[in-house]
Picture 1 (cartoon, rainbow, N blue to C red):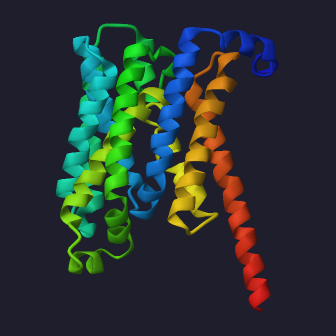
Picture 2 (picture 1 turned 90 degrees about the vertical axis):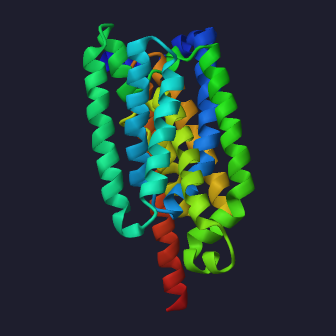
Length: 287
């Protein structure tokens, strides 16, 4: 334990590692991922899609496992699997009453199939393990290019549909009455979440992707009800967690996901405490 904390605060070793190309690629990937996940997270929270993100991550994991087995791009496989999952969730889970059961069915199927594919993979155990907890230091130039293009596409589409999607999230019935294509927006946003989730799988893994896709948005919601400000705060929180997690993990050489999730949860706890104190102050003034 002492050796771990000694390495954690070994700033000279951290600075030395920051000079390597693979670390710079990891930081760039984390910055892109923090931007796209932070932008989507408040809407994920507003639309109560946290469980859907988890279900999507399972099929992203399945797609990555299939790509690992056949020897193609893991990032591409995760992206394909997440898009399939998002379409299934968006199309089959239109009704609120059946959404959770659809997600549960997709999640269990994806996890079971992914486990089978990993069992068939003859390569190193570390490659299998990285799909569950992430391996951002393995991001090469091709992966970074794919991540950047996919993230930009997600952000552009999200910007186009943001206002009608926000309207539909606040009051779906009124939005339908006003002519907002809710039945199109729901699966479309699910696909955007699926793509962003796939990008996060390679960073924090299928098991912990919620740390960037949900927690920053939940933290921002504790501080503001303004949708624009919530996105700004969420992006800041996601960037701090992603970049900070990588920097802290360098010297000890432990999985980056441990630090990303810890920082993200700490931010959430602080925001929750601040939000609760603010509400109590407002209640006291009214009294």
